[in-house]
Image 1 (tube, rainbow, N blue to C red):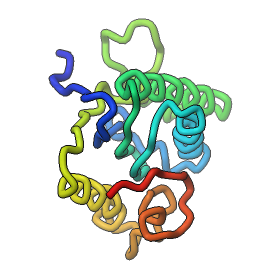
Image 2 (image 1 turned 135 degrees about the horizontal axis):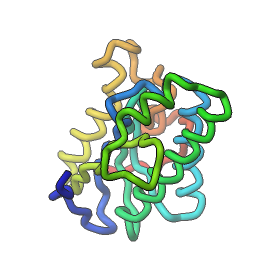
Image 3 (image 1 turned 30 degrees about the vertical axis):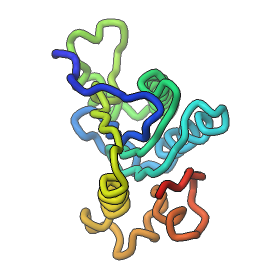
Image 4 (image 1 turned 90 degrees about the horizontal axis):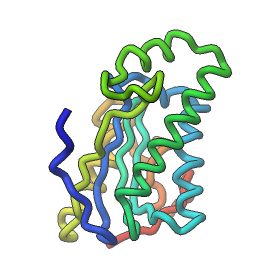
Amino acid sequence: MARSRYRFIEQAPHFLTCTVVNWIDLFSQPELAQIILNSLDFLQQQQRLALHGYVLMENHLHLIASSKNLSKEIACFKSFTARSIVDCLEQRRSSPLLAQLQAHKLPHKTGQRYQVWQEGSHPQAIVSEAMLVQKLDYIHNNPLRRGYVDDPAHWRYSSYRNYVGQAGVLAVEVLG
């Protein structure tokens, strides 16, 4: 598979998408969703990443984030969370999910048994306030469009609450 043509413009906020291989439904399991949330919180606490918006769905994550080296931080995030998810599934003996992660591993990934994330994150620099609003609306309304909730504030794994003055699961640096 060819490398992505997408590039990061460092320090600018970017809209990113991280997708589980074959869109496998991992994050409907609270323990696996918590791995993602804890990892994002850690990166923020270590000041390695500023999180401006997010939604975690059952098989993908949308972010608006910025960092001095966003490409590196997202790569580290995906590597760490993949290892943690596989460890958790092995500990729980979740053979069906592990079999799926193994079956959908790309052939050139010879140094590992499983693959959790699809390659790439398709970064898009946020270049205007209009684009920021559009991406935040897209992120926050994702659970609504899927029919999971009637109000974006009801989706636990989203920054929507942060933007309407309520406490969210994760802290975010509100833009705009």
